[in-house]
Image (cartoon, rainbow, N blue to C red; front, side):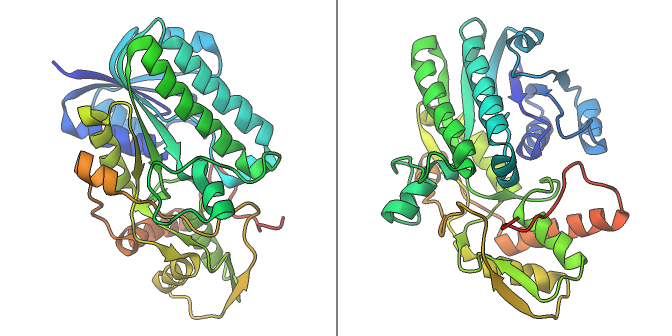
Length: 339
């Protein structure tokens, strides 16, 4: 019998790719729940839903009664639903707090009456960014790092605060309610169809607009980028492994690169021959971020397969083709950090 799986937040970037990968395995009975806040189902998602007979539940899950539309029993629940994005935290911090807190609380309360065998909660490296910045914690960074933000009043950290709440909420409810739980923290997952408020779509948009000299915001900051197929593989491994019950995993790549490297490689792919100029970065942005993935490698057998340059090439090509169509995106694109 196929495992029944619910992906809450399944229409987003990670959700879509997770849904596609699970569907192709043909061993799951899949349901997708989302409010489709970024627009209606696009063609890729519609074709996927039709091909694999995926059940779709459209509702606003910040409203408790929306959970009445779901089944009462699932083998697995992937909890991906959340508002994310630097611009969202800076422009709508109150909504980031309201939406993400409501999604977490409503889902947890629903587990009291629904029968869920295992829940995987998706978190973020932003939860520990303040620890690295304020206390110089080691990089690459393991899972046991204390969680910390630098300025509780800064809107930039509202997303991180809600994810800390989620980690604590799901891990502690699991012990009292009786479901298994695993947390994964993503580290800069990227790829085609990732939305338009992320660094790589911003770069493609700016190179196409012939910006010159090309400003490198936060040139000396470092990140590790994980291609979406690797992030999804790590997610599924964490869900399927019994060793992961009650555990937290850093999912990403341990290769640390500078933002300057990322930008100049994107420029090379887009045949840019102009000058570059260093510039400030987004407020609240950390200087370094790179995960220690030893725990996921040893306990789950996780091993990233796609090098960041290979993934970047595929991603840049997708966004170049999209922007050249002239179709308007569902999200506004690049905004200068000091704006």
